[in-house]
Length: 85
Image (tube, rainbow, N blue to C red; front, side, top):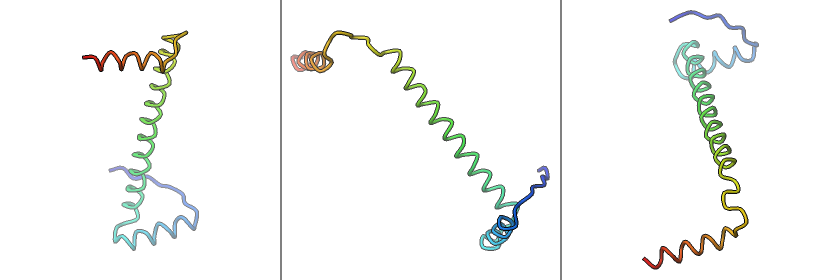
C-alpha cells in the first residue's frame, strides 16, 4: 500500500477522528472506506448514464419507423392476429 498525504479542513479532520473512534478503526481505514463508496457510486452513475444514452440512441434510430400509421390501430391489429392463433 502506498502512502498519500491529504490536507483537510479542521472540521473534516475532527469528524474523521471521531468517526474512526466510533468505528474502532484507524483514520486511514475510514478514508479508504469513504473512497471505495465514492468510487462505487461514480461507477454506478457512469453505467446508468451509458444505459440512458443507449436508450436515447435506440429511440432516435427507431423513431418514425412506421410513419403515417396510428400506432394504437397497428397494435390492436397485431393483437387481433395473435388472438386468432
